[in-house]
Length: 512
Ligand code: GLU
Image (cartoon, rainbow, N blue to C red; front, top):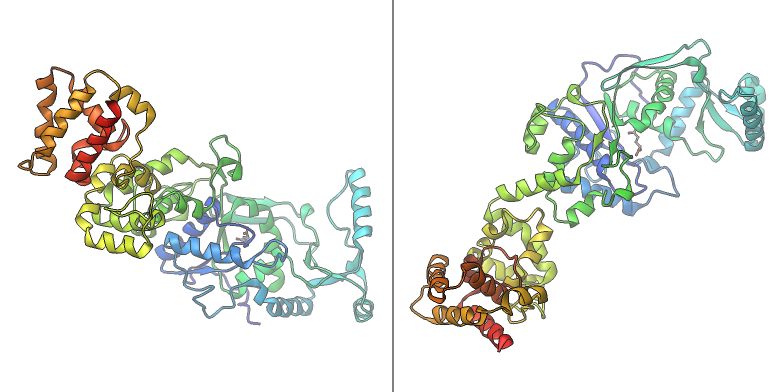
């Protein structure tokens, strides 16, 4: 075991870690912690390490680990050391490091920094209750601390159940540290307990293993949620007991929901993959999460990963809790959609088309296979790219796109929205408007292009002496199925002459 000795970590190359417990999905708060660690490492030319803290056997699962890894990769957060990539300080799963924790306990025993505790859970509970009743509870009463070493060893050898506790130096005084976000933070000596490092069953506790690993992995900065702030004094005592240099600490304020309560499942989607499934871009989620507690210059809201990694600094992190604003995230995502361009849009839409089995000439009733969809997109790329201007200013997420464009993929099975039919088709003049439209569009000399189609239809309201809105809403409902579809003439060009005429015909039949 080579733990670097009491030399300050300052000046050493930056090494930071994201250390999730795989007890659930990677959620918004965890993702933000990962992003800040990653950005800090990149900004400083340091290393970003992923360590899986899977020591809780009841709540940790390999599925959760896999899901966390997937989410991090999706966000574009590549780690320099950790699961799947390896590294000189592995293994990076805590369940594979139990031998290391046993060695560290040996080291602590040699340094006379720990002692075995034989108190039973019942005794401890009874003492705690009595002390609480007397309003004097200040942790474990250090009963076993004074058992002579040879007697303790004899009891261990006889198989008596025991935990291992940290021998907090009684002359230690307050624990004071300079948090890089919260500033000077003090925990009074009276609160320092001889807490347990190793349980009766031999399993190590979080506050113990986190220090062993951070020390052995040469972590220089611990950047994590402020729910761990109260663990920090305990951990400082463990570093001191190990004779390891202290990392610097930076605690991040919680993320709150719009109601001011800590963000949780009650607030709706909170996992990274839920946002992926709702059609958010990883770049947009990364951008928005970076803003939850950090700012580039107090003004700029849209920036790419390169700007983040080029400018990130802990000094710009706010102590105030950040409010998660779903509408702002949607706005950021919409901004990316607006900027991405047609080619990238088609690439991003492809998985959605595959999932629905949609093709240009296909029918909504019989979905195409993913291979057929891919082949269709490749063969008709300009047509698919022409969808982009229809939704670029309208959709906020990719998941919204296909429902908005359903009429382009409905083949001959377009379903007309009942309300729209009542309001726009079953009205006086609609049948005449449709008949004229049919005439104009059936003329083979008319080039099937947006401008020509528009010019051909623009004259109809004047000819009939009715309002343009009435004419075009009737045409829109007949061809797009409802009143709120994207731009009409562009849509007609994309639907094609034959299919457009068939839809006008059907609407006329409906009215007669
Ligand atoms: N495994 C801990 C958690 O998921 C994080 C520990 C740390 O960052 O120190 O909350």
